[in-house]
Length: 354
Image (cartoon, rainbow, N blue to C red):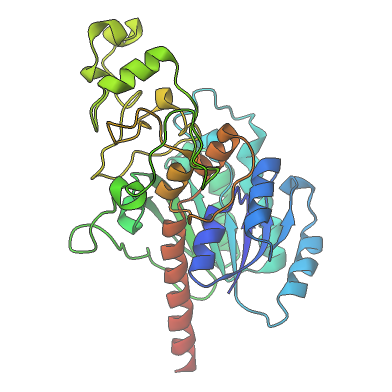
């Protein structure tokens, strides 16, 4: 099965689908550093580092058909930027041009006629234009008009083998029969939920501001004197409630929320949702769980908590690589969805022969 990955970022979905046995044929993303990372890891794919609005659908279809001489089934991935729909984005606006990027996929779907479509975004995408015409409502009407069966659901990444609590909205569409929610792999009655320890417990010790000599991405930024003192007081799984009074910000003395800020992770639980600033101790519960390591998690540790393989290559600065990691779909979750798509296709093939 072939994959075209629109809004690919650094390649979380592509990596997961490749692990599931798919051929990654085409990637597209506007971000130049994410494009460098993608191309370093998916040299087999044709890549467009461009705005989808400027790309001609017939040009892409012709290029894809050259790579798909056997007419293998196609999965089109469309994980458009989530910031215009995120509840964390207090400055979101209906004038944000990224809101209409999902609309741009319509003409490619008409031209390419993919067998499957995979859309992932923040929970709330399906609600934000519920009572009026908007990009998601238009997309659903388009899928119905094109004869696709589809299922919508909220996926919890920890229920698909990812050591991280991360809720995402997912739509899977099929041209070849009714499709259902992929079965969970982890949780009650299934495999145990993966933990931080499972994925980063064996990493070598480093200090804040250090880079390990054997892995240029096992590195993290330095901490200022005040934050170094704060993290030294912070227990595993702890936060500012562990600190002496003089280390607590005045705003936190009168506000009891946002306890994840300046927190340490817990070894034997999933990580919190990794954001684009997952390298920063002061921007979430991104402190290392080992109380002998007074630092934020490293870039490589963050990538492992998103289930990227150890040899995945990143391009850019610490901040740029962390943005790519935080924006990515966890590879293992994408892999499980890919395996479900494969099974659906095989089941359909068997049914059609009968």
